Image 1 (cartoon, one colour):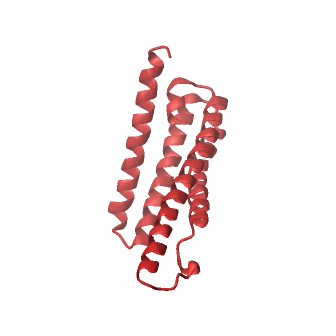
Image 2: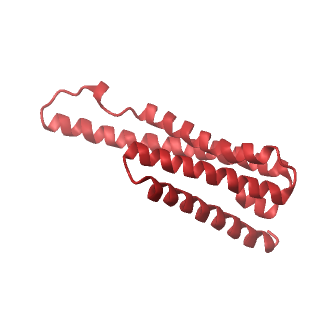
Image 3: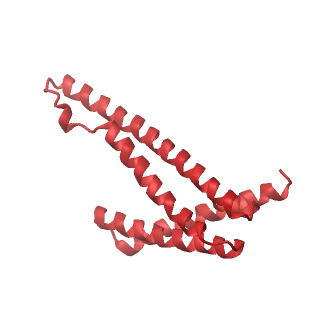
Length: 151
């Protein structure tokens, strides 16, 4: 959304891009998670067989559940800027609102990750926030540069 926001000022285009990005990102995350967890599953099954142990599939990671969880998590995160942009007509205000709501969400996700991982809360949340800002700035800047070339 920040990339399109760099070159297009209308809310419809920004929201359509956000929805497309949400669907594409959720699918990409789900497929990547499925492949990764299924590889882990195969390795664990092979290791158990080599050790002559019984394979209890209920105790092994489930690639399908991991894929669904990853897709849902991505979609929930992607809804944040969509909702932020959906109700603001003014272009500059809309960009500011998107950055603000995404920043808040990044902080919340950073704190949540720190709590679940028993990591330092401030350091973890600021790392997530800074990483998100860098990603938004790069996306906005590169798209603005390409857009200014008349592509």
